[in-house]
Image (cartoon, rainbow over all chains, first blue to last red; front, side):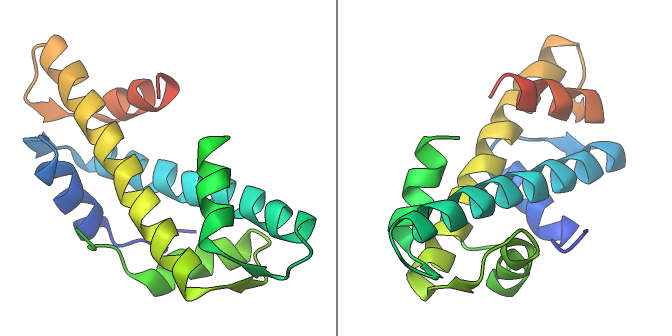
Length: 68
Length: 68
């Protein structure tokens, strides 16, 4: 996939205490983040469908996150 | 924070089954994703420190994800 910019993810990590982030760690963090988005998107899609909608709303994202 | 590009996150969501993503849902997904990265970064920083390192390695990310 590799759709997310590494620089932005490293910036968020550093804002949260990370001092130095190895390039292998940065790549792993990008991959895990993309997996997280995929998991939430799949669950939110199911929840929207369950509510009779094709459009995902914020409430689907919230519920998907609380069950993941 | 708002460091991650919304377009990239919506693209990943659509690659994982999302049909239409409301703008409120997109904003919520960006926020949840940033919170996820923050949580992993904090845990990985602790794990690297615990291993006597200042540099976060991929193994710290992996362990942080498995415990989150």
